[in-house]
Image (cartoon, rainbow, N blue to C red; front, side, top):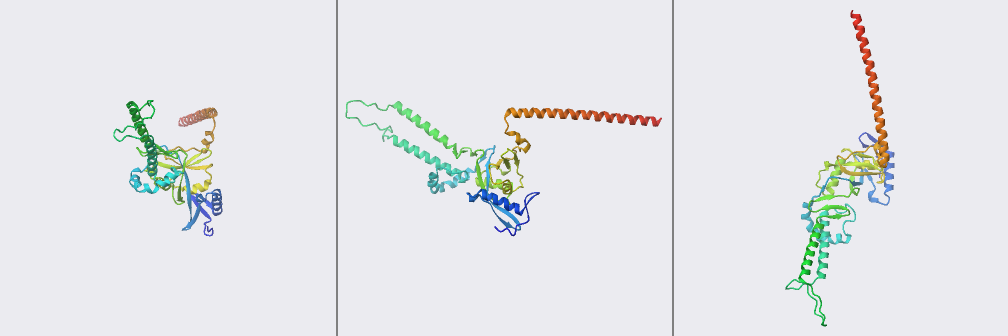
Amino acid sequence: MNTVHLQPEIQVRKGKTISRHEFLSLLRTYNCFHEDKKNFQLSYYVNNGKIVLEGLLDISWSVQQPIRLQINDEKSRSSSKCSQSSDTVMNKRGMTRWGEFDNLCNIAELEEDAESEAEEQQAAQELIFESSTLKPQRNREPESSNLIRTRSDVSLVKMRVKNQAVAAARKARRHRFSINGHFYNHETSIFTPTKGSVTSVRINSTLTTKEVIALLLQKFKIENDPNDFALYVVHASEEKKKLKDTAFPLWERLLHGPSRKIVKIFLMDKDAEEISIDVAQYIKFELPVLNAILQKLNEEEEKYIGNTYLRYRMEKRSLVQQLRRRMMVRAETSV
C-alpha cells in the first residue's frame, strides 16, 4: 500500500473526517485482528485522490417480515446443474456455512432426492413382492411338520396404510426443511433466516447503505424490495442506531472496530426502533430494578410538573398585578 498519495484529511461520513495517521492506525488494528483470516482483512487504493476501501462486510440477520426467494427462475436452471453438483453436495451434506451456495433451491432438491432414494432403497430391501399378486413373498415351507404363521390380508392393509403415511410425511418434509437452521418453505417460497446468523458480502467504501442492501438481497436472490430494510449498528450495550441511506457501511465497520463482540451490523426492517445510549444502559437490569427506576422517574416527573405549574401560577399572578397597576395609573392620569 502506498501511503505517499494519501490525503491529510479523509472523509468517512458527512461532517466526519479523520487524519491520515488515524486511518492507517485503524486499518492496521483491523487487519491485525483478522490475522488468522486473511480474507476478512481490508485493503485500499487511491481513486481520483480519494481513499477507497475493499473487503468483506459481516451482516447479521434480524428481520421480521417474510423473505421471498426467486425460486421459479432457479428451478429451470437447476436441473442442468444437478448432475454436476450432486457429488459435491452429498459429500458436504448440505451447506457448510450460510452463504456458501447461492442456489438454495438446487441444494434443497438434491438433499430431498437423495433422502427419498435412500428410504425407497431401504424399503425395497426389506420387502420382496410376488410378480403376480404384488404381495410380499412368503417364506418357503419348512421341511418340518410344524406350521409357520403367514402374513394375513389385514396385515397387508396395515402395511399399505403405513407406507402411505410415510409417503405423506416425506412429502411434508419436502415442503419444510432446514439449511443450517434457516427454514425454507418450498410451497410458499418463504425463507426465514435465523436471528443473529451472519453472512458476508464483498463491497467497497463507495457503496451506500441502500446499495449494500440491494447487493445482499441480489446475492441470495431475494425478491423483497431493498427499501423495506435498513442496516443498524448494534453495540454490546444494546445501543442500536440506524444507518442513513447515504452512509458508507464499510467505513462504519472500520470506525467501530473489527470485533463483532463489541459492535455488529444487522439487517432489520426499516421501521425497527432505535435505542439510545441512555435507554440501553437500563435494558440488562432485572424487572424489579426496572420497576423501581420507573417509579423513581415517575415521581421526579410529577415533582417537575408540580414545580412548573407552581412557577406558572406565580408568574401569572405577578403579570396580572402589573396590568392592574398600569390600568389604575392610566385611569388617574385621564381624570
